[in-house]
Image (cartoon, rainbow, N blue to C red; front, side):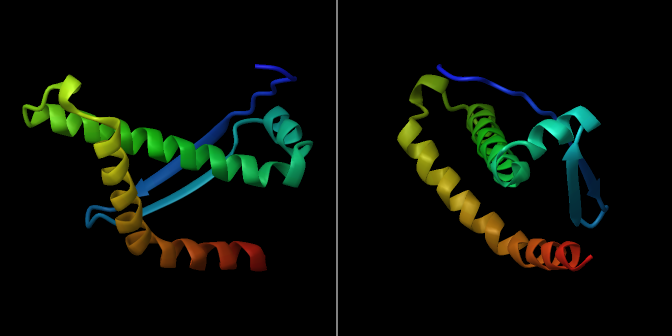
Length: 112
């Protein structure tokens, strides 16, 4: 790895209602993190959304592997290619569930 590396931390807040509804918010963990991210291209907006996407993909992948193993599948029998197809399908499924609400929230936040 070459070049300067800067680290910023995010806090993610989740609200889960008993009927399954989920709301989230996120913010820099400290004033220092906000200042650091503000110096990045786009003020850190792209880096923040990309970091959250990478974490989503990593968590969904891990959850899927654990689920398969809990059903008796051996780790060595779980291929990266199969996981890739399953994760891609899961992303599409979740987008269908959450995109409308996420867009509505973004438009509300932008109007403030």
